Length: 187
Ligand code: IMP
Image (tube, rainbow, N blue to C red; front, top):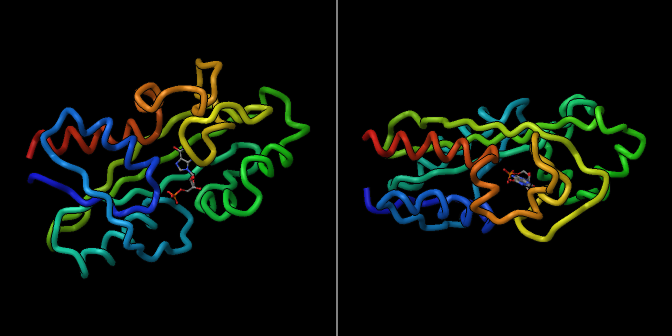
């Protein structure tokens, strides 16, 4: 396999994948072609449905990813609605919702699910998680999405305050990509 399509409109995700894929001899080609994202209660179902839909249209090997931010004290919100919430109330809205939450009540986890599919084979899923907390203010201008308000466990900076390669060492997507890359190394 010489190249793989990454079907996404998100350049930030592509940059993170390219950073990890640099250790493989596989080129990532971004395709922003869109696919249905079903309303489900977990990311795995969203990724699987999307991958099976794309398989009907594209014969080249491809990956897609679905990610979300799950905040403990908001019962996992925004979770599978992360994209919608980001585009409506954004980071500022999340901070406002959590205005009265003390430090110990700000726990959150980022989850990432990659689906890889080739021809008619059942798509394979690769999952990564990163535990941390929601900051009290937006900080930093790297990355994308909720990066300015997420601080990984053991760190003092938000994801938006660190370089992509640093984020990739600890992030949900870094972990799911590591699993995907291990899989590619073994096929
Ligand atoms: P989706 O996987 O593109 O549906 O992502 C859902 C939402 O979570 C989007 O609004 C993204 O911006 C946000 N998101 C996903 N991954 C990350 C990340 O690594 N950092 C910050 N926000 C993210």
